[in-house]
Amino acid sequence: MEREDKKSLTSALIQITPENDDFTLHQAVSSNGINEVRRKKIWDEVKKQVWLAGPLIGVSLFQYCIQMVSVMLVGHAGELALAGASMGTSFASVTGFSLLLGMATALDTLCGQSYGAKQYSMLGIHMQRAMLILVIVSIPLAFIWINTTPILLFFGQDHEISMAAGEYACFMVPSLFAYGLLQCLVKFLQTQNIVFPMMICSGITTFLHILICWVMVFKSGLGFRGAALANSISNWFNVLLLVLYVKLSPSCAKTWTGFSKEAFHNIFTFLRLAIPSAIMVCLEMWSFEMMVLLSGLLPNPKLQTSALSICLNTAATVWMIPFGLSGAVSTRVSNELGAGNPEAARLAVNVVIVMAIFEALLVGSILMLIRNILGYAYSNEVEVVKYVAALLPLVATSNLLDSLQCVLSGNARGCGWQKIGAYINLGSYYIVGIPCAVLLAFVLNVGGKGLWLGIICALAVQVTSLSIVTIRTNWEQEIPPENEAVSSNGINEVRRKKIIWAEVKKQVWLAGPLTGVSLFQYSIQMISVMLVGHLGELPLSAASMASSFATVTGFSLLVTVGNGNGTGYPFRAVIWGKAIFNAGYSHAKCNAYTCNRQHTPCHYIHYTHSTFFRSRS
Image 1 (cartoon, rainbow, N blue to C red):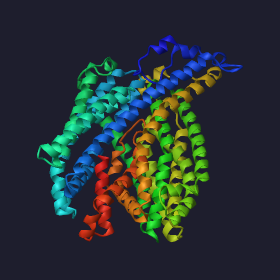
Image 2: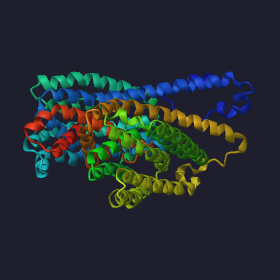
Image 3: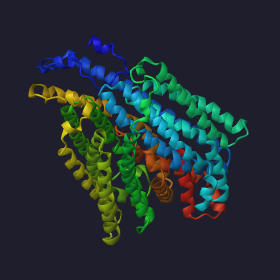
Image 4: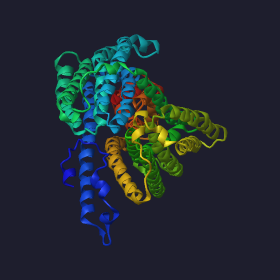
């Protein structure tokens, strides 16, 4: 235990030490309960979870604050400035940031398996390769941003807003290159469980951004364009801080050994992970948002859209738990396969499936108990509350299937089955799910329930397909070729109980912080969602429709591409909270504008759409 106390907080989470091997069941459990040794181990785990969860939450909050500061300051520069910045940010996110973020997350798989295989020098090579590719990709994207105004005018956008958006996007071009490099550095450190330094760097950057953005917007004469330039400066500053840490910190001494010519090799390996994973994630995201768009075509669209939006927010909230489990199993599987331990990887999958089922049953029971009162948290309309109560049993059912598909998808990413997952999602959602939803809702006149039943059908096919693939997996063949020699020959029955318990602790260790980060982030948005819902059906339904359109046409790509640790899925979990939060803000800011210009509800949705995109970037 003394050896363990001396270990750095930045050391790998997943370790098997001689002390663990010598730790017998007799030592672990006494006849009177938990002995002192076990109590100390549990307390050590609690401290490690706090040390991990705190920095992760801090990083997320600081990064979000950078965007919030820019939004607040631009909002004081005038209505046109806000609309132009919103449109420019939306365009930049769809055509640039989403692609760079997705491609960078391919490092989750590559660096994760290399770290598990103790091929530490490969992490630096993978990062260099990703940086090279993202810089090259950023060049044509920069030309697209420079021509933002004519592109928006071609699609029929307002002339003044298009001009302002074009100026804003041009000033964000430096941020494009910084963003790609920043994502590569973040993934490089995350795969090594080095999170505390990232929190410090993010905090310094955020506090500096407040001053920079204020000076650029109000003192430099640039106006709203200064906010875009401030974002660029802050991103480059964050890149500089992380580069200095990687270069100077002893924690990265093994993983960063300097520039290497090997970064120019195996470029297509990186791309083969990125493209299928983008398809895998986007197909699922777009299908869920399409349900809300379809709800607008049903009779009484205000009721249907509002109720479905509330249910999606509820599903997104409870989905945070399996999302954490998904990230945990993805990391566990990739690390164990990289280390040449197929039995441990299979055990990780078995354990997480049991945990997901238990969690889903518990959450489903809670949803059933509160189904008659949950709607009041979002709306004062009795009709909406009753309709939500009727939909919640379907939400509970879909949550069980969604929990299973989430952890099975995490296993797929850990194994590198992105291409298989893309085909499964295509068939599940677009060959089965959406057609069933249309049939039930519009042909059989089941209404909103029919749309949700379509989601359940898609999830059922997805879970079945992923389960078949997982059951038929030959885990020995999943080991990277260079690590086959170190493969375990099996786990004997004497050690199996001990290893199962250790596996549960490891997955809780990983899933806990991931779930915590997502819940803390999403809780901010949930408060706003509840308040907007009390404004009436129209703001809530309009915000839902706008966010659905925004997601389908752009931000689903922000999720991830090729993420080996399941980080791509938080997008679906937070999209509704952020969309409706910004819908309420835009409703208050542009109410007079829409009345004076005699805008239709479609224009209201369009403006909300722009505001939504502003916050996501």
